[in-house]
Amino acid sequence: MKAPIGNVAQGWLRVSLRYLPFADAASADLPLSRLLRLSMFQVSIGMALALLNGTLNRVMIVELGVPAALVAAMVALPFVLAPMRALIGHRSDTHRSLLGWKRVPYLWLGTLVQFGGFAIMPFALILLSGDTTGPAWVGTWSAALAFLLVGVGINTTQPAGLALAPDLAAPASRPRVVALLYVMLLLGMVVSASVYGVLLRDFRQVELIQIIQGTALATLLMNLVALWKQEPRNPAATAPTRERPSFSDACTRLFARTGTLRFLCVVALGTMAFSMQDILLEPYGGAILGMPVGATSALTAMLAGGSLLGFAWAARLLARHMDPCRLAGLGALAGIVAFCAVLFAAPLTSPTLFRAGVTLIGFGGGFFAVGTLTAAMQLDSGGLSGLALGAWGAVQTTAVGGAIALGGFMRDSVAALAASGALGPALSGPAVGYGAVYQIEILLLVATLVAIGPLVRYRQSSHEPASFGLAQLPG
Image (cartoon, rainbow, N blue to C red; front, side, top):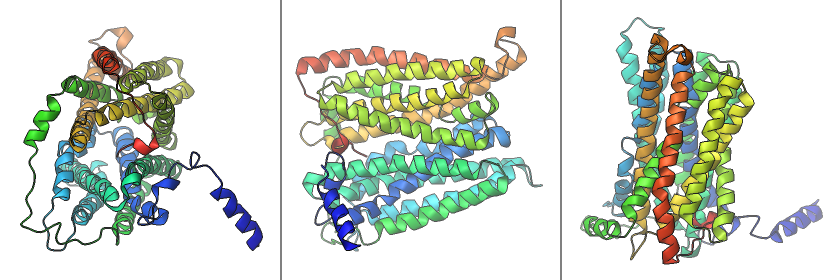
């Protein structure tokens, strides 16, 4: 038996690193097994995002009858502190501690807060379902608190974990290490969404509560394994007398660059366009197209799968020196086609067209994210890469939260007008509210294309080559 096994091992060694994109992320100080263990915190975050943005919002809107505007506000709560991501990463860089740890305290604190949110959530759902004699407002506020705690935990754990990885990796492999962590986040979303869909094929509230409890326990265990004996203690680097640098001069230098403000406006517009439907796709599939819970839960996996496909294709285009802003524009065009497909799925009663549109939304969003991410990396001038990427992440995440809340509010408002007959007999069906949101997203994508045009011309005149691959994908 040893001979065949040895032949297989030798065969793997001869495989080009082109086909094993993360094999060269490991090093002597950070072997692949340790790197994969560290990436488990990203998998747990992917599980949380799939549960919050996918399964829970559909159940609360369709099965529990919670207004979509209220659900949208709850799902948007985790994004309230998103602008503080850069600050949390900076504080973990300059953390003062006698124990000598910079990242571990933030990783562990975020894990506990996230676990606490999941621990409250089942009781909040019981109160929202009406199986209680208590006041209804207790369930609403409990659910809001649960969503907020999960969001605070994610926004605390992720910046610290992504900062720990480059600390442990060799300088040459740091970009590939961060790339692996980001892709593990998407894989966590895809796998967990698929599992949730299978487990909830025949929906029962008890099974949903068990899934939430299992996700909470998995989050605690996976994050504990991820940070166990990863960061070496260095009391000199965390001495209480150590001075912390200021952000003010760096911000002034960054925003003095031509096109920076326009670029951040493009990020905000495009991100809102791709995010307003985040809590509406699954309810749309369930209420309008009659898809069961299991089938709509699988939509999150299709969305993430489309994003991964977009990443792969974008890497090839950028390797051929395509301008990253032009690539983002192509993503916006793909998004327009995708939302048109989702819109026409209702009158055609076609779940297949709807699924294709959802996958294309992920694909276009992947193009847009990769293009703007690469452009943000090229904003660096004299050691501003962290600030530039932090500004990109803060704008993007804040736009996601605002778009989710706005999408739910618009859906409920237009649906109420349609039900009252204020929009006329032609616009009185249950799909009108959803359709209005999708049309607004198309308009936002058109505005994104208008705003991004001058950036493409400016970058072409500056002759800045662009390259992007898995090795350059930041978290």
